Image 1 (tube, rainbow, N blue to C red):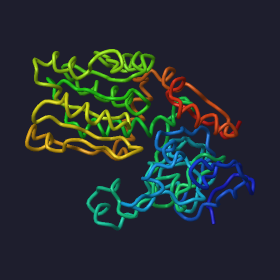
Image 2: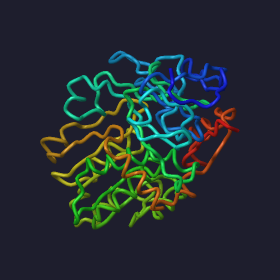
Image 3: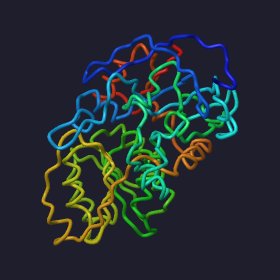
Image 4: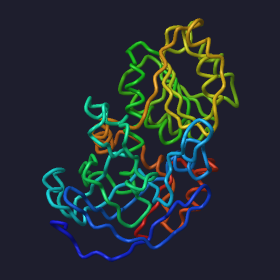
Length: 366
């Protein structure tokens, strides 16, 4: 039983994933929160690159000879969102500091809190956790309503952040975490490959680390202009210049100190390994659509690199919320499309094409 509720409908519209390239707009039951759970009415939800790769059938989500797929259809996708609290299970308001009518978000992973990683505070690597929108015990936000389970990590969103910008809190938190994994120092030359929604968040976060030179790479000049607005010192288009040569020349022949990969393309991995200096730090964030093949020797015998992965946005949501509340990013340039939920296929197609959009969001109430 919920302790506090508004009058709610029995069913809602929801995008439901049934398999690769099989997403449908359906009627779905509106959840009822149990003790410790929160129900929100979704105001805006973003389409992430990982949503696209799941839609297209990437092995991470549907499995291959090396692993079982992560996606469990039928499931409602969507893990970048903001919602208005419309029902609170017993104790949930006190637990999360939320009241009816508050705007709220939830971290993209729902941890188990019992595994080795959770007990060590490394909840984002939970052995049994579920990222919203892929598993049936954590339905996502491409729907009119969404339930935050009792194990979720929730935050209140200040009303000073416009609703259309709030879904960007999640990718920005991921970008902040990736930058932290890079351990950027004051005199470092930092290269961020990819000026999509995640890469742009990394640019803004890396700027706060005050590197000597912050370089952004992308094949889209429009996105590179937004990267400059986010704080990039130099932008380079690999289709127009030899970016490895340019970076090496600008670092007295050494190469960059930190390279953060946020393109999702295997070629960007090889590019980074070539342009990074000896003893440099390579941060890999992307979900790759296909396997990456490279000369592994360069990591050890040739350059002795520090290779760091970056997964999700642990402990970074409050920072992301603060950055957006302070207007530290050009959000009017990042959020390029807002579509009704019924136009979800158009939104997926825009993200897939990548030549017209940066961040595409859906509005379930329209």
